[in-house]
Image 1 (spheres, one colour):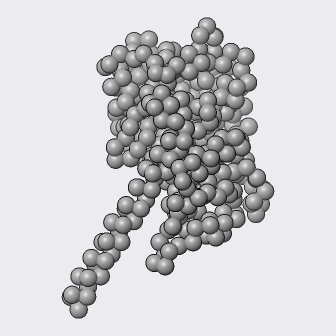
Image 2 (cartoon, rainbow, N blue to C red; image 1 turned 45 degrees about the vertical axis):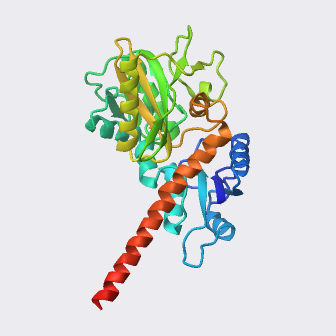
Image 3 (cartoon, rainbow, N blue to C red; image 1 turned 180 degrees about the vertical axis):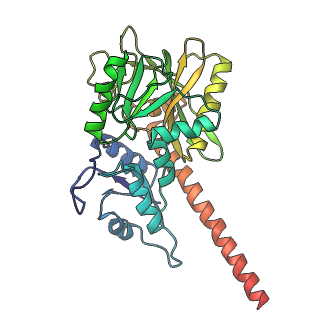
Length: 348
């Protein structure tokens, strides 16, 4: 099958420089690893930029068949270039053009990228999440929030801007810093002292829960995952434990809460749910990453490898899961259209 790998590396393919710039992108090595894995899986590949030239490149690489149906799929690794809801940009373009792709829809990405909406949705679904407030100044009432609190941008990922605030006197500066740097609300949520566990999910109708990954903070004072940790710049970066030891009842609860979060936020194909488990054994969902990182040191990849999936098999599994979702539903719609046409002709 033809598979176009779409990423954002060259930021020049826009009409104007306007709106908040996306602070993250996939590294060349990870993108190259995905391309190599797809080729190992027997696919014809094209690497292209998720910018204003994207649709032309895809149309040339995998033009429609004589019936106007798609002949390939996109492996989406595009975080976006600029503006709001950046994860949604490439999927929205592909939806409009009728091109199948891996991962969540624009709506799924938008829900997952907005941490406040995520928390509201999962709380309504009965999934526990830390108490929180949304702030713009840092002088708003904290209500019954208990310190310390974690302060982070509402719409970012990769722990950008994340800070642990120990007392109310530090809150204003932390919120103002996020609003000034990221031009968005600050999410202020209670810090859950305890274990941090990542749950990797793979599939749609049947969702496979991969082995849990725990962040081992050792003796570190700051027991949260920071941007420096994820960028491998921290002096004492937490180590990942996979599989981690979790008693049976808690393991079942972690699986159920993660799948409920995945479904509530309308994610597809694959995602990673991050949770904290407090000292009394109560789990809380922090957030869901609708485009879990696929770098070799990433928690999602480690979970897959522990489950017996090589990197190549994981990448090709994601493509196959997306292909089944896209093309089987396409076949069903085609059959339904044919049935309607047959009925119409019979009614004459």
